[in-house]
Length: 350
Image (tube, rainbow, N blue to C red; front, side):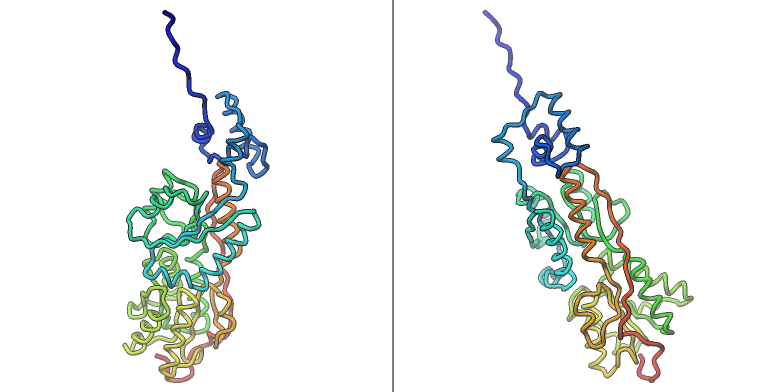
């Protein structure tokens, strides 16, 4: 009796995608000579297909190929996720991401996560609701995100570049931004600089380190009484500023880690009849649209949201095309308005 030989299973698109280290949609595009995939990646996938006798099935291509990708924008758990979604800087950044995706012909999916599960990132990726993800800020999730990169790399993070980081990030030069803010106040003759912000967040910690570097450079010893750690919430910033005023600690200026925190601090100062900038100078961070219309118009450190959105989308599409992403550190810019002045002339400075 003739022995039957075991038939070898023909290679599928899934297999080829795994061999190439790319998505199924990238395989489909490459084998269809779609210019969205770089020539180098197209040639590599075609060579693999040839070596494994794979031919693109038209029906499979139509099923798997998504000419319009869906990109999810997620935010790691925060003290108050609802507030952060309404934060003007986040909304501006989100708008720029949407613009960049729209220009590339893709769609945005906004996803809110509670962070209640310790494995929420992995759980979300398993739902396969999107082709790729943009995470807004690492929060306290740096180690989880690093671990995720080992099994799922179709994402980019808006945030600080951190030691031992494996994933791709796009963010502002927070250290120099914080240093720039403090240096400007010192150049005006201010000597007692308070810092307002949540140092648990990597981006804010870098701004704080820049603030400390400027003080050290000026020969000024930091004062722990003036280091106010507060979450990115308007009421919390107001309360922290009130406590600083009532503590009797001497200060003549405030470096705030965001424009919203700076505006809340100004409200508290006015409640105690302290004028900005005559008594207390204050500088924000972000340069949200409202900053130039506030009273007084807010001096701030500008983050380049438009370029940030563009770079995040560009890097994510590179990853989806099987190419190496490049982390980007964007320069910050000091925007001088009316909330800062020379040394206080009245005795009301704290």
